[in-house]
Figure: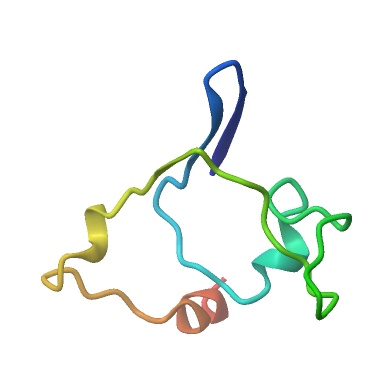
Length: 73
């Protein structure tokens, strides 16, 4: 992922990735510890533009689950 901030606003380009529930704890640039909701959960920064790479979202692409792939490493 690439996060751009500047005069044009805040732009996040995801590249090709799989979302994980661990991301709010791992991506401090997107989920800073200082931003919390009423339940004291970390929330994301404001994104003006989001560029998603959905190249492999087509059902014709079938990939093994990430856990299976990691086990081969």
